[in-house]
Length: 371
Image 1 (cartoon, one colour):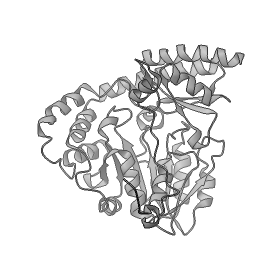
Image 2 (image 1 turned 180 degrees about the vertical axis):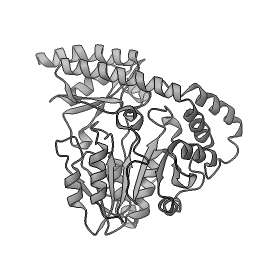
Image 3 (image 1 turned 120 degrees about the vertical axis):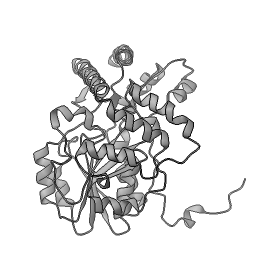
């Protein structure tokens, strides 16, 4: 079919500067491309142990009702989350993954002529959502290439700034900001600036960092969490925000009806109750993260310490390493799109998956060393 319409000219917002989010390569795609029969995906920071047994049972039990629309207000889930965080259900906004929540917040407050401040190597969705909203993104370079430069971000705030985005721990650099420095930053911000505190990897630092909800204070603070990482529900797409009730009510006007599926609500509600399973799988991931970082450090390949469920490999030939890993059935995440061409992000997998990565990387590095 011949396209006779110039859709770019018809678009209300020019899309030339918009680029789709590129997820980690799916296993089935790599198998097809390389003619392999087995592959290990270490590209998307998923929980390799799967969901809690209680969540799996809840999904099966709810499956018979999928001909019905889900609860549009996520009533039970909001009540459970409110109890968990010591707030009211009005302080909770569920979404189709924390990704949708981030986009909803940015779209609600930023538009043409407005600015959104974020770290240059922060989660790339901040920039995508800002551009899609027609606003201007202000990317502030990290003070050490890895950690948010809060002083620099504060200096970038002006009368046009509507939002500031902070990921803690940060993806993809793995850095972590302390509570005192975050509160000092919040204290210095104007009261009418909305602050997104993206804590997708919160469960992996909870034991050392504590819970920021109820401890950090700013009228525009919105904390975002997800069930995609530690809870192992990435395939169901569910996340949520915690913030001021009036602020969330404004954002809720932009939310599409029934945006959180019936199965996602059932699974998340059940997963919340299985605290022992969560603690055990997080502990296993942290142990495996330490093992991988030790391996990379001994090999002279550790880029930096990480506070998420991933490790960072750094080498001048990172792109070649990534290609060779894929050739042998291991999928890493190259960080070139974040301005880090010498870095790979490696998700912490199960012990067997991590063994596959280690045993695959060793001969690759031997060959590269001889090249």
